[in-house]
Amino acid sequence: MEGLLNLENFVEFTPAQYDILSHILTIGYAAHFAAIAYFILTRNQVAPKYRPMGTMSVVVMVSAALLLLRLDISFQQAFVFDGSMYIPAAEAGVEEATAYSHGYRYLNWLIDVPLLLTQSIYVLYIAQEKQFGLRVKLAGSGAAMVILGYVGQFWEATDVTPLLVWGFLSTLPYLYFAYVFLNITGDAVTKLPGEAAVTMRNIRYLFLAAWGLYPIAYLVPAFELAALDGVSAEGAVTRTLLFTVADVLSKIFYGVLLGKVAQIRSREEGYVPLDDPQAQRS
Image (tube, rainbow, N blue to C red):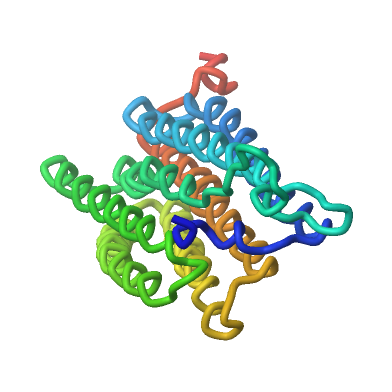
């Protein structure tokens, strides 16, 4: 079973490395907790038909914030300070020592990814009869990507072959939903009003940038196993940073931009929020 532990459990951290990794996780869950309030407060700024998108953003934020908080707690419990380094608790002889489980991220993504991929459907020009099929395609391929990646990460510290094989398999559904997403959003850009079209174009760029970080982070252990014949604390910190930045971009920034598109479309359709001065005057 030792071979199925994540890379963090095979390295020792300097105090600076330990603090940086923990602080990255802290910033991550703090940002998502703050975003919960933002999406709740702005939910009524859009017409009722767009509000399910805001509700989904709240669910994603709660899920991600709790996951990153759980990871930070797990990290602190899995290591002890020996006077100069933070070493795995099991190595220090701590009774009932716990291991750091990076797999929690994948369980969180299994919730978040299908929601993120289907959120955009609520603000796009898509015929009603096509929406269900698109949701199934996006959510199904997104879940398949996460599950296959979840399996692969168990070998990240010991064997590059299964890590790469499962990573390649998870890339196939990733490429599929990226194609579907870019296709439907590209079509919407030509139909949305000016400012909304610009924002949707930015969402497409954000999608490519943010989702492109995930495979890079997944491959960090493979790079280390190939180059160093083992994993390192630097690799653990780098991987955590990449995944956390990707989460913030693909969840918080993405949700904010989608909300902006929904607000523009709501105004174009004549919706006026109750707290708008125009509504109060009328």
